[in-house]
Image 1 (cartoon, rainbow, N blue to C red):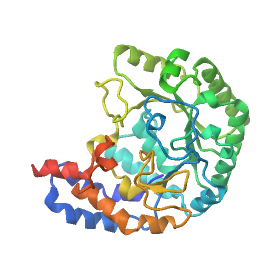
Image 2 (cartoon, helix red, strand yellow):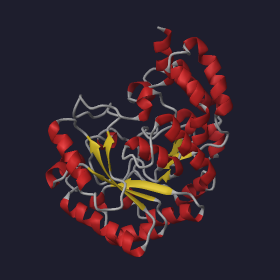
Image 3 (cartoon, rainbow, N blue to C red):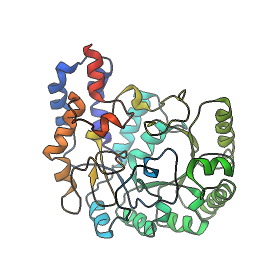
Image 4 (cartoon, rainbow, N blue to C red):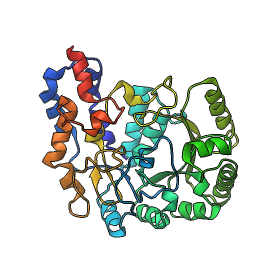
Length: 363
């Protein structure tokens, strides 16, 4: 989840930034305005329950670049983080969704990454990071721990790791959203994208069985089959069309996910970044933080090696980390562009930055 109130309340100044009304000369003004709007209590975007994974995905930096130790988050650390999370109220969510519909013309029935982000991610704690949730031996208990605290949950998995029995246990524990990531319509393409342990036919058959089990037993879990658009040629577009047709007779939220962060892997240079934030800028410094498997608190999901850790949740509260001088300086860098040399946000991220918008308006 992320701070929906900040996103909404910052809309007026965001519009001025995007429209070029504010420049680098207004950096201090923007910093002060955002400081007044940012929540003192942080929102947690995701908790990485494990960074173990049995896949070798071509688009994931974990495959070749991640050097940190592989581990599962400690139970006590996970529970302590959950105890510091306050889910959004239904009233706040309804108000935010009205804002999204009115300002962005994105509706709940739109099948896109933007609709998924604003209507689903906004309310859920994500339980994945740079690992595969289904090989987390404690994932059922972790989902249950969230459910016991009324925290909605979602995680994305590779259905080659799925069984109907495991899926039922996870749904029974209260998982809100179950996302299945697919990358092709045959075994060859599936293995090309995610490695030799992946497959299509068995995965697809399992997913259909899981959907039928959910419906027969009355579980409320939203199932989300998705395919990443790794190319934009006619063959890829045809595959995307056929993928969507697979789900026409089922109650699911199927969509084609645009590959928006492509600094590590890009299969087709003609791909279009369809993220709503492509026309805006990264808001993660003000809207949420992420907790990694070792307890490190980082500003976004792209920090595969915890290079930008602002503290550890085993030793500090989320609130202390979020309100630290180091975090405030990080937010300032996003406004001024005065990042340390070689910083990940500048060198290894495709997301537009606020300072780039101001710089463009200044020139």
